[in-house]
Amino acid sequence: MIIDVCDCRVVASENSTSINSRLAINTLHKALLRYYPDKGLILHSDQGSQFTSKSFSDFCKQRVIQQSISRAGCPYDNALMERYFNTLKHECTNHYTFTIKERMDSIINDLEQKWYNSKRPHTYNNGLSPSQVYINSTLV
Image (cartoon, rainbow, N blue to C red; front, top):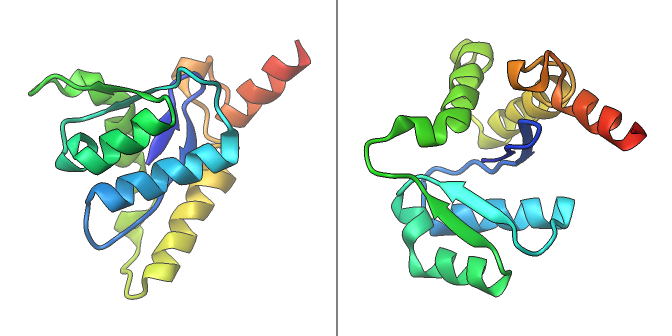
């Protein structure tokens, strides 16, 4: 899961049966293909082995992405992600029993794109959804 801290938008997400460096690389690659960020991108994560692995670090270095990693035992460093996952559980995954990965992917993608990014107001965005923030910033 990658969230843009400027407007709280879900940029990319991937699901898997295991959390590993391949999943992290695939998710970041998906985000890069969608949004073409400027050089100097800072990617913040926790200290999970998927983010501290040589393969993930090399992937970031090749693309001039600076890694920023949370301090041990400091949940506030990842508050935006923790808040998103709390919302995901309460608004989505707790209401379903998934037996097929594709169905889970579809439902989570719908939540992210049709509700979280498009309609859900965020206090950080002065009550606007991430899409509304983007539209307002391009009109200025």
